[in-house]
Length: 123
Image 1 (cartoon, rainbow, N blue to C red):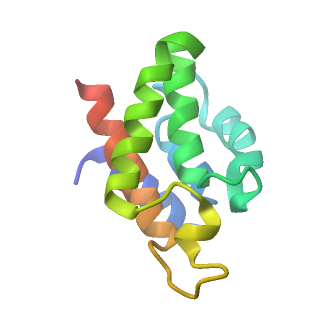
Image 2: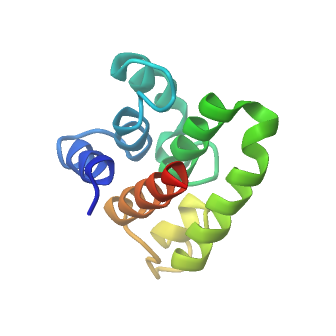
């Protein structure tokens, strides 16, 4: 497991939200401090924006690094890869709300989103 993915997992273990765990681990890639990343990540957590917060945080890193237009294809690729691994990017579906079938717990989503992002940033 690579360094930033491990940091995201440890952030989550230490009480960060899914989005905070990912965005703070990649704060330098996004051109922000960890404090700024933590603040920016807040609205993404807990399914409030429908999509998984870990995925939204990874997408925010791509937007900050490449700009809105430059990140569009990368975001589509991130979502494709995440969906391929987990069958969805929608928080409620991942957590099994309404179905009782959990597709991926939050820690797994943090791990997957961070690993995909780290891989994409190294390309």
